[in-house]
Image (tube, rainbow, N blue to C red; front, side, top):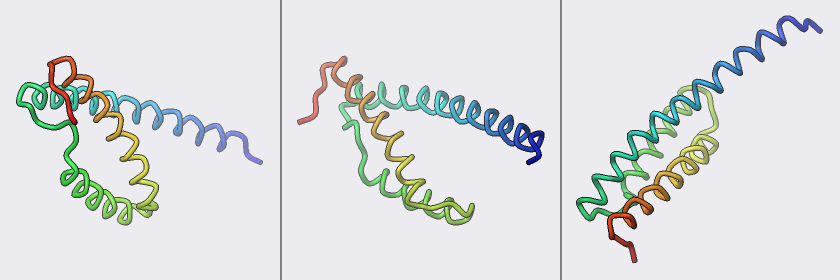
Length: 99
C-alpha cells in the first residue's frame, strides 16, 4: 500500500472537515440573527414549509453530486433541529413561548 497517497487523502479530509465546521459556524451565526428577528416579531421558531422546500432542493443537489439524498436530508435535519433549539431558547429569552 502506498502510504503517501493515504496520507494525502487524510490531509485533504482533515482540510474538508475544518471547512465544514467553519461553514456550520457561519451558518449558525446567521441563523442566530434570524432567531433574534423571529423572537422580536413573535414568529415561530420552526418553518415547516421552508424546511420542506429546502429538503427538496437539497435532494436535487445531492442527486446531482452523486450523493444519497436521504443521507443529505439526515444531515440537514440534524442542523435544522439544532437551529430550532436555538430559536426556541432565543424566543424564551424574549418572553415568547410556543405551545
